[in-house]
Image (cartoon, rainbow, N blue to C red; front, side, top):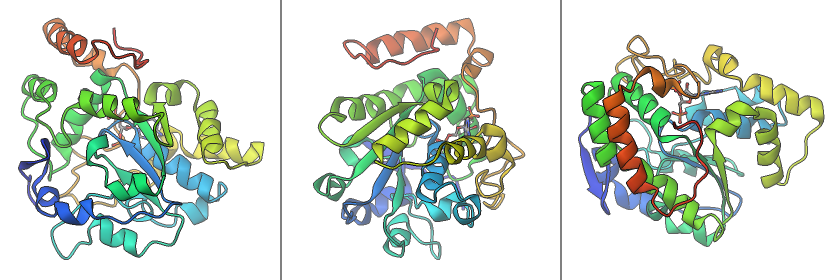
Amino acid sequence: LRRFPLKLVKGVPLMEPIADGWDIVENFQAFPDDLIISTYPKAGTTWVQEIVDLIYNDGDAVKCQRAPTFVRIPFLEIISPPPLPSGVEMLGKMPRPRIIKTHLPFHLVPRSIWENKCKVIYVARNAKDNTVSYYHFDRMNKTQPDPGTWDQYITKFIKGEVAWGPWSDHVKGYWAEKNNHQILYLFYEDLKENPRQQTVKILDFLERVLPKDIIDKIVELTSFSSMKNNPMTNYTFFPKNLFDHSVSPFMRKGEVGDWQNHFSEQQRQLFDRAYARWMDGVDIPFRDLL
Ligand code: A3P
C-alpha cells in the first residue's frame, strides 16, 4: 500500500486505482432495492451507515455487527490492489437488499442507480468541520495523498485538489438534484442535535416502522462513544499500513464546531471568501459556520 496520486475522472480527482478501473465503476448494475449512502468524505458516512444497517436488521446489534462496516456495506468505487476485492465485486456477492456506500459526486454516480430509481441518503457536513476532519483523515489514511501542513491543506481543500474533488460541487450537486430523484438530504449537525428525530426521518424515508424501544436502542448503539468503542465500526480492523490510528483515530472527535480549534483568523477569512463564492445564489441550510 502507498499514498496514491490523484487522477482526473471527468474533471474529478480520484485515487489512481479508482481512475484506472473507472469503467468497472461506471458500468455498475444496480437493483431497484439498492440503498445508496452518499457523502463527501468525512461528512458522517459511517454514522449513517450504522443507523441504516441497524434499521435493516430491526435493531439487532448481534446480527448487524457481525462484521466490520466495510464488509457489510461495500464501498462502490473502491478498487484496491489485488488480491483485495473491488467494491463492485463485493456487491456482486451481497444478498439483496443491498446498502451501498459512495463518495462519488452526483454527476459521477453510475447511471444504473438513477435508471433503477434507487433511494439515496445524502449526508452533508458544514465545510469547515468537514475540512478539519478530512485533514486528520488524510494524515492517518496511508493511501490518500499526503495532506501536508494544516495551512497547506486548507489551500488544497479550497481548490478542490483532494480525493473526490471540491466539497462545494459535491454538496451543491446533490442539493440541485434532490427533488428529481429519491434523495434524502441530511446534515451532520442535525444528526448531532437530534439523532432520534433524524433516525425517524431515515425510517420514514425507507418506509419502515420500528417500535419505540428499538429506535431508542439504535440511537444508543450509534452514539459517538458506542461507535468509537465498537471494533466493528471504528475501523481498527484495518491494518496499520492502511489506517494509522496512532496518528489520528478514525473516530476522532465527532463534534460540531471543532474547526474553531484549528482555523487562525487569517485562515478563516481566506476560507470565508471562498465559501461566499461557492454559495452565491445557493440556499443550502448549513449551520455552525461563523
Ligand atoms: P471527526 O474527524 O470530526 O471526529 P466519515 O464516516 O464520513 O468518514 O466521517 C467521519 C467523521 O464522522 C469523523 O469526524 C467521526 O468522528 C465522525 N463520526 C463517526 N461516527 C459518529 C457518531 N456516531 N457521532 C458523531 N460523529 C461521528
